[in-house]
Length: 65
Image (tube, rainbow, N blue to C red):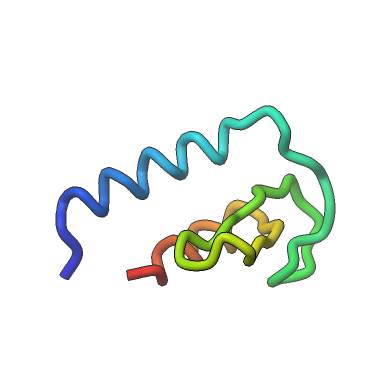
């Protein structure tokens, strides 16, 4: 089960990442669909970065638990 603080942190992170002005158009690295991309950094490994569409980004954040 996820605690309230984790849910709030995810919501804040999603809001900031989705509304950042540096989003670029391209192919998502997971689903290969063309879309506006969000640059995702793995919090456990700061070296790992990916450019994901909004759907894949949401799925990755939900699976972090």
